Image (cartoon, rainbow, N blue to C red; front, side, top):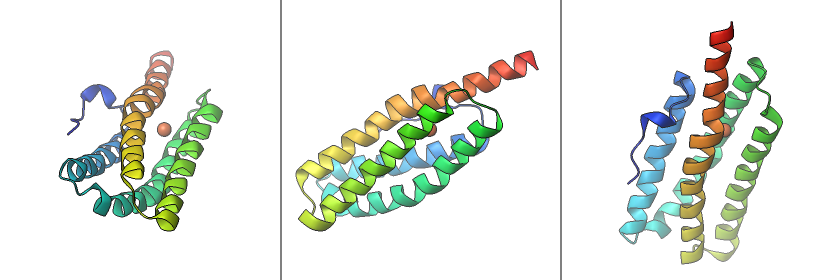
Length: 136
Ligand SMILES: [Fe+2]
């Protein structure tokens, strides 16, 4: 179980809510994995991620666009990479079936996403917004 830390909040309610919602799903998946049910849960989790990223990433990108966030291009690339990884995993599951390896891989990708993308990259959006507020 990973607990949400207030430091993960970027200060934009809609985005923070979506991030918390993602964490809930991740925890469900981690839970299933530790109960040896990761294999059953993987398809559901991948299906969720496909829909979730569609909405969440476009919301985040719209926000970055609106505020003229300087690193929008790089950030967008990271989102695209994540979507690609999810699709690749889905394809692997479809063609080769669920394996322990895909389960471990998804586990690692999701943890990395939370610890590096959300808590570092997305955080920069919040910091940029705060700085803008000060100078406005
Ligand atoms: Fe992001």
